[in-house]
Image (cartoon, rainbow, N blue to C red; front, side, top):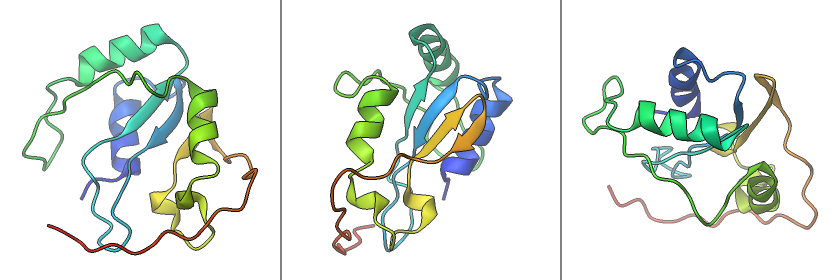
Amino acid sequence: SWGAQDFLSVLWWKGYALYITFVHMPRHYSSELALGYAIVDLLSQAHGQELMHELHGLRLPSQEKACVVEWCRDHQGLEVLVRRFRNNNVMHPSVAEIHKPLLFCNGMATSMPQPTRKVFCPKPRAVHL
């Protein structure tokens, strides 16, 4: 199953390493299978539109389906994404790092800000494959 590091490799290969600010590829907690989508934030709207054009329809290695890229209208920008995820259950200390969003500054990984409230442990759910 593809993960955030695999997806980041594609973004870096496409030349976006210095423009990425946020990547999150949600996975099921128990099976660790990717849920089939990623959330990406880049430094500018122009970079985002360019990346959308490059990725839409791209077939990733060992994947049956091609990428479908959509512009998210609900959560725009790094500040909004950090605010959305910093207090999310995915940030609980018991959750493995592969489930957590990644922040970047100048192409280098950086830490998510500390939560502003208590973060609860996610509840286990059944796997429907």
